Every structure is written in structure tokens, then in C-alpha cells.
Figure (cartoon, rainbow, N blue to C red):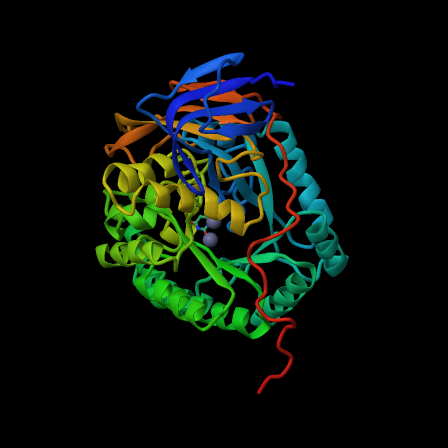
Length: 476
Ligand code: DUC
Ligand code: ZN
Ligand code: ZN
């Protein structure tokens, strides 16, 4: 019996986990059914001659339809954020289900699930952000949700929503029992408070002062502490948005000791320095994020850490706020840095920026590009059937034109933010055709997605496992 092929992508250079295959890629329904074997006929044919055929991007850190630590809604809905992601070649996203004060976790997750079911146009999962461990039914809800397939949690050590060390240890123990990865925003709150208060007292409150208010030592201390907590309890941890050379070195050392820690960085730490905040008036607010951008030496250290596996992936940390009174300027046109929402949009630009650096400009090469933007995030967060091109995997594919050059404009993204933080930057290599589970959702810069067609990705198993048989009990 022969099976009818729905879609064949012909004559591309196909990137698979076992190497590059030149030839045809066949899709039936939602799935990849063959890679590299000649296909006679299919209902739909696409030529990929001269193109690179790669897995759809997996972005495992994005804030969507969420309230910030400062109590402000971000600019994107699931519809606008996932449209933007798809336009940039991303087909799976992990965003946050963020607990509000006193809220039972079951309610948190069902609220976010309802928003995503309504709007999402790519596949999605949630990290559950834990901010109130005293909420009704906390432990039982957490276990139920993890077992149901929400296998990653998020905690903060700062931002007015931080947990104490004791609470973080408790979460690590609960996560270990039920089998979840804990993601951490790691910056020392006391160091930030001291620096921030001194700047405010001195009347130094410009966006540039935001970088000074978050000293690199805040990251270094918190990353080292969290690595030790992970090591002590043998609980897998993902350190979010590493920005400093010393932060990366702390991860490297912890991994060398056998600690179950993984870490990510983001394009704005690899390609920007704190100089982006030096703009006239409040304009620098567009680039304000935490941790802040750092130095060229940090960029070099982060690339070295990606190359040696210290950092496993690059996410966007998409955190969208408009540059107006609904977003960055909500506290007024002359607000101080401490009153301005942090974050910049990145879902749509992450892959083209990384492709340009890694594939077009030879930094680490195309196989490493696929790994750190798709395969590693899918594996580490346990997204089944995502992040790789192989038989049986979901047919989430991007056909890249490696020769197309694009210079980003002032407002050319498909989110709801109204500015592009990468305005003026030229990238070589562009996602020409994006396929989600066998369906074209973007082709030649035209979008074809439909709200509500993105699917929740149930996660039953993580690659980030504890390394010992039992968590350490002794304290000496
Ligand atoms: N930093 C975060 O940790 N999250 C969202 C935005 C930001 O700048
Ligand atoms: Zn963060
Ligand atoms: Zn974030």
C-alpha cells in the first residue's frame, strides 16, 4: 500500500539531528514521514533548491498577555505575539502562566490556558510563575499541574515578586518530587536595592542609569547561589538570561561539579551593549531590560559559553511594552528608570539575528544554530516531537533563503509593540516559508495563521533529570 504524500519539500539542504541531507522531505498530515528519500508525487510541492530546510524555532522564554512585576499588562495578546513569532520562523513558544497575589495555581493556569486557546497561532506551553507560596492549595495544585504536563516552573530572586531562599528551596524540593524544571530569574535583590536607592537619591534616574542600578555582581551572586541550591538538592534548574562573563563562568563551574544546571542567554546580550540606553531623553527606555545589556567583553564570553555548551540555548525573553502611556511611559513622559516597565520585543527577530551571526557570518555554524534555537530548547523543556527534522516528528519547518538581506525598519514587526529595537540592523538570511504541523503559516512575508489553531504541548518527560537517586538530606 502506498501512502499519499500531502506535501513534499524538494531539493533542499535538510538539517537533521544526524547530519545534513540533500533531497526531499515528505509530510503526511501533521508529521514528517521521510527525509532524503526521493518522492515521486505529492498533493503539494515546494521547491527548496538553494535553500536551507531547518526545524521551526522553539522559543522557551516569552512574556505573552501577561502582567509585569510592576503591574502593567504587556502589549501582546497570544494572537499578536504568536503572529510575530511565526513571521520570524518560530513555531513553538513557552510563555508564562503568572500567579497573582493569593491566586490558587489551578486558576492561574486555567486563565492563561483560556487566553492561549483563544489566540495562539503556533504551539505553546507554559512555565508556571510562582509568586505566592501561601496561596490556597499551593502544594497540591503544583503537583497536579506538573503531573498534568506543565513541567517547568519559574521563580524570581528580585523584582518585587521574589521568593525567599527558604521558599526557593521548598519549591526545588516540590519540583524534584513531581519532576519539573525550575527556571530562575537570578539577580540579588539587596544589591539592586542599594544601587537603585543611591542613584535615585543622587537624582540619576535616566534609562542609562537603569544599567547602573543592576550591577553585574547582582547577577553573579544570585547565579552562584542558585547553582549551589540546585547542587544541594539535586534539582534541575534553568538560569534565565545570563548577561555577564562571570555569570557564564559560574554556570560552567557548577556544571563541572556535576550540578544539574542549564542556562540560556538572549540576542540583546549577544548583540547589544549598555550603550543602547544612551539616547536623548527617555528614548533609551525602549531598550531597558533586566538584567541590562553589558559590554563587548561579556558578549565574547557569552559566545564562548554557547560554543562550549555552558549555555544551551538562546531565547528571546520577549517582553513587549509600547513606547507610550500604555507601556514604557505609563508613569509619565519623565518617569525615572525605576518606574519604567522592563523588556523589549524579540519573538520575531531572534531567529534572523542568530541566523545572520551563526550561519551567514560563520559564528559556530548552521548545525549549532539549529541546536541552540530549536533542538536544545525542545529537548531540555521536554517538548515532544518538536525542534528537529526526523521521521515521526511534527512537521514544523522553516525554509530559509540564505541570500536574502533585510534591514530592519522602525516599525516593521508583527507584534503590537510599535517599534523595532533592531531598527537599522541588516541581517543576511530570511525565513521564506514557515510550516506548522504541515500547514503553511507564513510564506514570502505573508501570514496565513488562524487564531486558536495553536496547540498546548503536553510535556511528560524532561531531558533535565536529577543526577542522584535521592535529594541530599544532610546539611554538613
Ligand atoms: N526582564 C525579565 O526578566 N523579564 C521580562 C523583561 C525583562 O527585562
Ligand atoms: Zn527574567
Ligand atoms: Zn523574562
